[in-house]
Image (tube, rainbow, N blue to C red):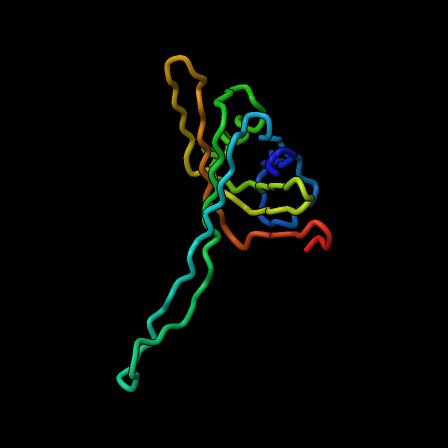
Length: 144
């Protein structure tokens, strides 16, 4: 169930998913869709002259991207934070809490803000974030 899902962005710069003392702005009531696109892991070719087939080692993981779409509301507190993050180029902590109590948190840079408007419609907004570091996924029951 999607209803009951909450998405928040820290008002302050964050450097760790376990950071404490941060305050958050809620993006819930202007959001319609949240999409996490997990990144890929680097593959390093380690094939040698003795190899009988291609050989690879797996490198570091990429946290991916997060996109939030919904309504463009310039005086919304969270959208103001996103605008500031776009300008100052500093990471914020994004936290998604699902209806079942499980959580997804990651450090993120605001990589794009856009809007579109159609006749007989509302102004829609899209906010794209580049995730950095290791996201934290917590189960509802265990907290980890």
